[in-house]
Image 1 (cartoon, one colour):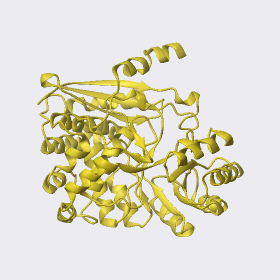
Image 2 (cartoon, rainbow, N blue to C red):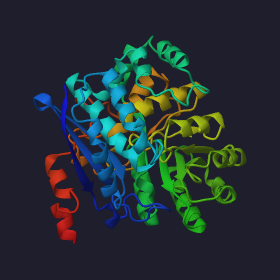
Image 3 (cartoon, helix red, strand yellow):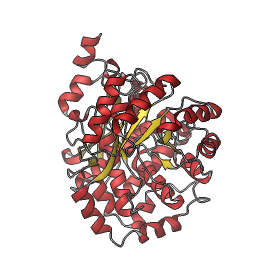
Image 4 (cartoon, rainbow, N blue to C red):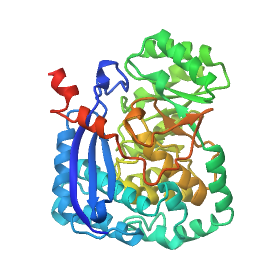
Length: 430
């Protein structure tokens, strides 16, 4: 199954108009996707994307096109081919210089890697989570780039983790299909929403079965105290409320701000400081205990996740389906999290991320961690209507996707309407 061509589309949604997705560092996001279609022999396709928030999506699309030579003509049929593709995209010595393994080129690699996994899962006629769950421990380990990881996790240790998870795997697959996976919602908490909307959406979330919600914080302390107090009063003492500063603070400011919010019982503080500041996160975690620390949506690669875990810097690890280089690198991160016994609670605030990360968490449960304790997938109720296999949450739980592939394919009419700058949505805007 050779790849004949790669199509790249700059897809943008004007979510800044309603302030959906707004936070202390990103006040005007336009949820966007640098979108890829791999066209293979026989009319087969693989769809993938990486998430951005507007300006710069064109740069990401250009980066995907620059990597296209590593994909066209390549045979993609199974895990070995996917491992080779991942290494080709991340090991190109001249392009690697632009990172290495971080930034726009890594985002571009994620779109292509994810599209290739979508293609292979479609060929197997399985949803990706179930395709992954059917791979052998040896095939999973082969997909991981072990360079830089052996001081924290060796391939032999990873094999032991995966083999230990084999008993009961079929039962866990059946459980996921029957009962889904726990979710929490960020939809009530965008920073641009007024207090009445926060309260209304928080109450609706609890009525819909969520046991955790999340609020954005970090722009103004008194506003945060007022909004948090209103949300806590709306949902009562038993619902977990996480807060997210989106990298807003220095270490001392994080301590001061969260101390002022502590009376409202925050479950975790997410991205309290620079995503690159491993020691800063460790210090914040030490100072704020028992408030927990979560991060990961802007963590560049498996090496930084390794160091966050080694430093004891986080209580929750938040993988992102497209920030690191796609499925292969996320397999490494899931294995690292299991080794260090840190729950994985994926980031999904963005177009299509809910669709993707549910596959990774469900595989984590069936084949790696074997646990759902303190594990939840973020849910944001935006833009799912544009996908052929949209994420569905009922009773506060993600339903297991059943359609073949990685759930990345957007509807043709959505692609035509929202492609920038020539789609009707953007022509009308200009």
